Image (cartoon, rainbow, N blue to C red; front, side, top):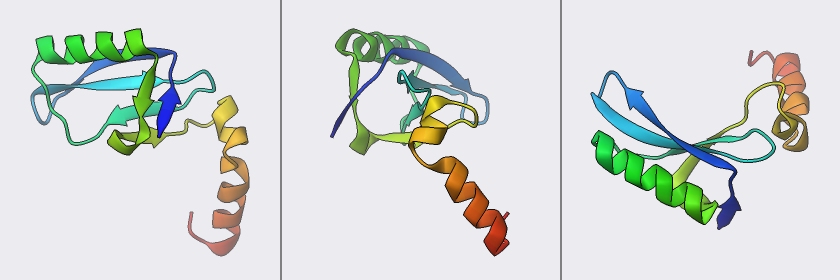
Length: 90
């Protein structure tokens, strides 16, 4: 499944001593490329390609929905948190 993104960036994983790639969509979701540790030049190249294409394959990326973003409300995260608190999971 393809997903439209607005930006892509390189990040550094201190523990692995390698770089990774993140992408963001218009609603604020953050996507992390799963199971890929790259040297800096390859991470920059991949980030540039993702940014140029403007989309990612969701099967390859992990998504994080930050609190306070539009995506938090759209994806029903507020309701899920209320239910988790009610059930004692938080």
